[in-house]
Length: 200
Ligand SMILES: [Zn+2]
Image (cartoon, rainbow, N blue to C red; front, side, top):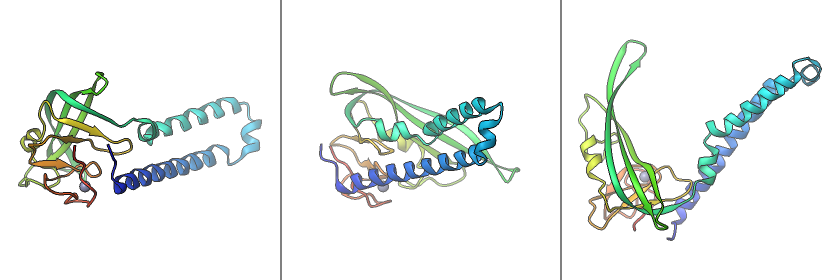
């Protein structure tokens, strides 16, 4: 399938920004470890210190999600199994104001074109309690979210994006692969961020 130019640009920008942030963090970690290089190498703990440095740098690769962002491949497949999981959780704001919220996950098993099956979280949203959920608002309610997906839908994932597109001809709404919000099916651009809505 042909990937729209604006999505390509978004993926490139996202990758470059993440790599830049990662390099910056490696730079800061290197400064912390090796500011006083002679004393580091002279000390009897030199080997341990260098080993810790290497481990910390390798960890940052995963903290910044570099493998996922660079090496995860695009795919197209069909949903063969679907589940919606809802969990209530709470936040403590300023240490004493407790706010409850629900988090909803939509998990699916997707059969790829080559017959291979993968398990993937295709959507997750946090629903704030005590607010009136509106259809297209951030944190739309869980029943709305669950209704957007069905077995047999096509799932399109473009490497470097955060959200996958779940498509079928009779959908009312389609997801934006950049920001994850829903827009009416006939839209060519996302209502929230203006990126192209992927179709089929
Ligand atoms: Zn969007």
